[in-house]
Image (cartoon, rainbow, N blue to C red):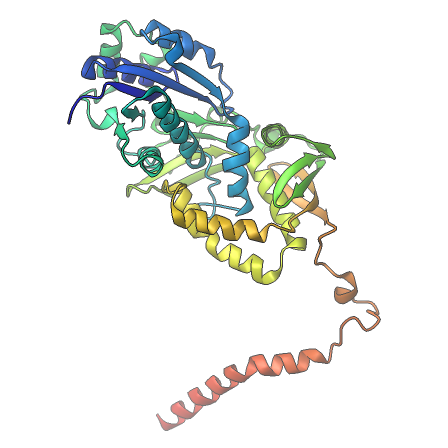
Length: 410
């Protein structure tokens, strides 16, 4: 295959992607365009610009883009309309960011006339699949370069030797093995590897970055209200806020109360099991709030159908199929279900838990007249239940009679 002439690289400014940048230049002799996404990871990103310039990247080829609003509005919120949880626990914080990054990589490739994009995901994880499936879905002719699957820099020692030989700055703490690796964005932090690789050992407290321990959280509960329109959060305590601002506020509130910690051994798409420590404080609060408003606004049939497809929807996101037709089909069904998911939820935040304690809506299906234990003034005729039960019992009676008859003959 011919060497690429121009490559758009997903660039964090860290040691690994700086090595990749230089490797692309030396291995292929190509021009490199860098893309750095501000996903709310909580790090200063301007040093990435300086480091890219130091490595010979032209200023017009360095792109640092604030995508926080796009991330929450177009990716996180649609996913939360589905109440998506991978394997019943994981809120998909890393998974949902990858298609957005790929979209910008492909867009920049088109803008600059690049013939390839590149990423820093290793050959063992899920991210390589997510980046590349997304890129191919958006541009089937794009070339994707994954250096970790191509180069011979197979150890930390070799990486550092390459960096030193090419005058790539190395932070002092990078000269040794990091105790664990971290991926962060506005939705979550994900920590894995090294000190966390043995699932029998409790994760050390220093791993957690966004949440206090529940034991150290305030001894007094805090109550907040989250308002929704058509399934998306729009306000906190009556104050209308943008999607990214809502998630930022919920992260602060949840983190203060030790909410959103998860120690999880998951099944990676590539076939192995992996242990990760996740912190999703705002997302955990948002999920509880969204389920709370659905409880009074979503019909039982619609809600149960939606719950039944959720595992498939979550798996598609985890496995990198955000831009697949089946995910888009499920999204259309989910979004249809959210037409009346409008109202307000009151939540209690306390010692690691977010609990829905109240919910109200002009779109509510809840009828106190029907459910009351007091006089319902004829709203519901309890005699109707007798026929309802007899009809539903009919097939069970027939089965029981059949089983008894067969047993007697036996």
